[in-house]
Each structure stands twice: as C-alpha cells, then as structure tokens.
Length: 142
Ligand SMILES: [Zn+2]
Ligand SMILES: [Zn+2]
Image (cartoon, rainbow, N blue to C red; front, side, top):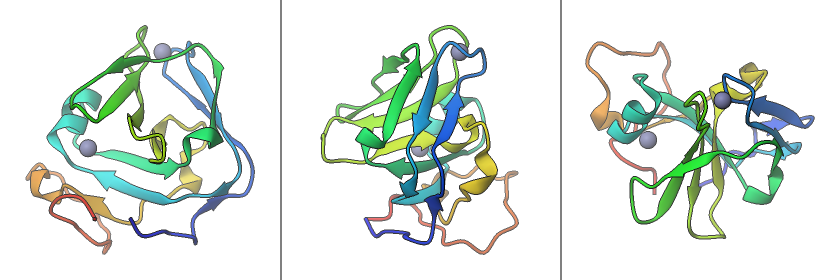
C-alpha cells in the first residue's frame, strides 16, 4: 500500500462508540491511509452507504475504556464493534504487521482526517455519490 504522508494527527485524538462504553486514543503522527470503503461488508456492518476509515500501526491505538466485541466476516480479519450500542469501530487484520483501520466518524473530531480515495467503488450504491475528485478504485488499492 502506498503512503499518504501528507495526512497526520498533530495531537493525540480520542474517539469512541455511540454509548461511550468503548473509548480509544490514537497517538499523534502520520496516518498511513485514509479513504472511503464502499464494500458490502462495511455497508452491512455500519448500516450506512459508505464507511470512512484511516489506518495507523496498531500500537498507535490504545483502548482507554471498555473493549469492543469482534465479528469475523472473513478468515483474515476481525471487525470490532461495541457490544452495547453496535458502533463499528475497528478493522483489525490477523497479520500483526498490518495497519489497524479506525472508522473515522467515531473520532470525537473527525474533520481533521479527510479521506483521500475510494475503495470497492464497484459496490457503490447507485443513489449515493460524493462531490469529490478523489481516485476511485473498483476494489482494493494494491
Ligand atoms: Zn457503545
Ligand atoms: Zn469495506
């Protein structure tokens, strides 16, 4: 995966689920990737037409309250969510060298982490469109 060194967190960023049972902190630094995912699995899990996410090394994300439950939709990763309110929070690959994907809208201040591309655009819902000129990848980027 190519890097996007132009996107970074200038300070630690806090986030959490809708009910507050799960809280986390992302330490400041560069963000490896930030994009929109239109895949059917993200659509189903979030109940929304698209999920905005960003990726950082897993050691940069610290659980500060509670811990999410895990749903495995594939044999290579877990999808972590609050078992009380259902908020979809993290996509964690089994490969310990892989980045951890955080769902951007669960940040307390998501505005500072803009998406830079679309993936799984082939699954975009026909009535959903964003007004941007970002790269649109039919599936993944690699
Ligand atoms: Zn919750
Ligand atoms: Zn997805």
